[in-house]
Amino acid sequence: MTKKHAKEMAHLLNTLPKSIRVGPWDVTIEIHEKAIPRTLTVDNAWGCYCPDELHIDLGRVGDIPNKHFFAGTVLHEIMHAMWSISNLKAEGQEEEVVQSLENMFVQVFRDNPEFKKWWSRAVS
Ligand SMILES: [Zn+2]
Image 1 (cartoon, rainbow, N blue to C red):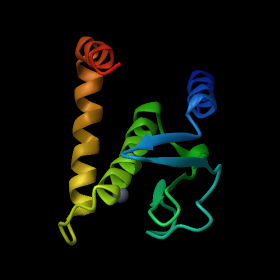
Image 2: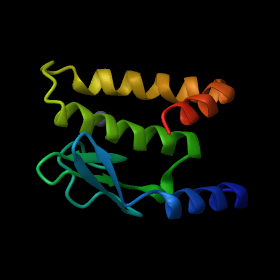
Image 3: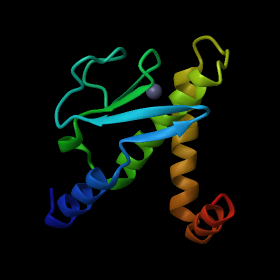
Image 4: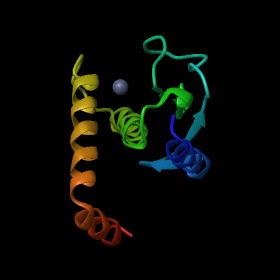
């Protein structure tokens, strides 16, 4: 990990809100340096949304390859929270839909910085 990457990651980790509102609920966010201790999904996951606790765990932050990957992971888990809180039904398709949307949102925001600024102003 380069010094610049380490500094960027430290800033992102330190400034990530500890909770965000998703629908009517406050969803808490917890960061783990290593693997998520109580993951309900796959072992060694980067993130996990726990619907019963309205809680997002982000794990292995010391292994994150770059800030874009981290941004995508955070968005990914928020979309799982949106899916659950909205009570969407699409048995067996949630992970595929969330992963596809994560990739597209990260790409759209990375490649369209003027749109990203505009959108942020528009929803403020
Ligand atoms: Zn997922």
